[in-house]
Structure formats: structure tokens, C-alpha cells
Length: 354
Image (tube, rainbow, N blue to C red):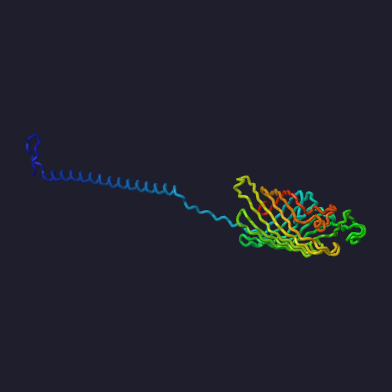
């Protein structure tokens, strides 16, 4: 038993009650400690959860700021269309062919139409037709051209091989004055020129040709051409023409975003001619040189070209070769110096009509 003092008087308390009280106090303290410990664990869990949420949220925000890998459907490859058509038209103050006017130094119009078939990007087949207004001695209605060829390309080198037919429908046989070289060769009633020149009704002919062009870069190219006819202008004389051509294109930066382009180009050629048939008196035509140089401006499908052309043919040789109906005793001016202005429009179906 333990002693308990109450109001100064000693009392005895049973030992069991004392132990029970002590145990209760200790158990209460233990329960309180356990409650605090349990709260601590809960707080720890909450904190850990909050940290986890913050961590997840932080990662998500960072990932959103990074460029994501985007999966897009591949664009379909455009189908290769081998067919194309080139066409165009032009007007000029003087239609000049190898230094010789074909329109009596007057205005001329022309148009062309050229279907093309591309076997691949480096090999093209083509056919074409073209028409030009002319003014010939035999009064042919027009020049109608038909042609066909192949254009192979090897890197910067482009070739062109083909055949070109020049047709002159509607011509009349023009005879010379009585006593002239061709007097009586045309049918009765044929027209006669006062200056004594004469010409067959049909002067159609064809040529084989080959061309090569080397493109150095976007601004410079150089080429060469060769044409051969076994019967040039149906005169009975062989004809061979060879030339070199060059072109310098202005850098696009010169004109900014205006869409205007410009170039300088020139050609130097030589025409070799054989001996004519009996209608023209079996004469040897003079070979000659011809050249032209010009500047052109382009805008979209249009080209405006200013050119100077000339030959070294004498007026007498020019008259013999052309049978110029305007020639005088001094000869013909059809082969002399000429200033040419030409406005043309050139399109292709694949580029301009899609």
C-alpha cells in the first residue's frame, strides 16, 4: 500500500489502483504519441503525393514546350505525265531567214503548234507545224512548216535531231521576159516580171538538222547548228547551213520581283549553196556568211526582241539567189542589213494551262 496525503492526513491507497492509474496515464501518452505518429505518416504521404503531382506537372509542362515529333501522311507522288504541247504566236516587222527577208521587208505573223512526248526527263520526241506570212516572187500564199525530231539531254548538254519541211502552197510559175533564161519554161499564160526575174511555182523543200547546246549555268549557254538539204528551195542546188549561237541571260536579281527578264544573244552562220538546175540556168549560187545580234526582254509568256541582221552577199548575188520581184539593175536589197523587232508569246500546256 502507498500513503496518500489529503488535507494533511495520511491515507492509504490500494496498490492496484495506483498501478492502474499509472498504466492509464502511460497508455494515454502512448496513444497520443501513436496519433501524432499516424498524422505524421499521413502528412508525409500527402507531401509525397504533392511532390509527385508537381513533378508530373512539371514534366508535362516541359514536354509541351519541346518540339513534338509530328507524324504526317506523306504527300502522294505526282504521276509522271509524258505528254505536253508547246504553242505560240508572234508578229514582226520583217521575217528574216538566214539573213534574207522572206516578207519583202514588211510585217509578218507566225504561229506554231508542237505536241511532245517525254520518254523520260532526258529524252523527248516531238512533231510540229508552223505557219508564216511571206511575200515571195511566185506569190505563194504562205510558208507552212512541218517537222519532227528527238531531243536527248545529257546533263548540261542538250541535242536536237530532226527533219524540217518548208511548204509554200499557192505558188505560181513566174516566167522571165521574152528572151530571158527561163522564157517559155512556165505554162502559157504565166505571169512575167518586168525586171526579168523568174521562179518555180513550187519551191518547197526539206532539211535534216542537228543541234547541240551547252548550258554553263543559269546565265550562259553556247550552241551549234547544222542543216542540210539536197534540194534547197527546190532549186536543184544542195544547201548546207552551219552556225554557232550564244546567249547570256541577265541575273534575276537585276529586276527584283517584277518578273521581267532580259538576255543578249547572237549567231554567226555560213550558208553553202550548190549549182541550180536547168530552170534557173545551171548557175552556181554564191556561198555567204550571215550574222545577227540582239537584246530581248521577257515577262511571263511574252518576249520582245530587238535584233540586227546582215550578210556579206552582194546585191547581184542576192538577186540571183532570191529572184527578188523588187530588184533593180543594181540588184536586190533582200539580203542586206536589217533591224528586226519581234513580239512573241510562247506557252506549254504543262506549265501554263494547269
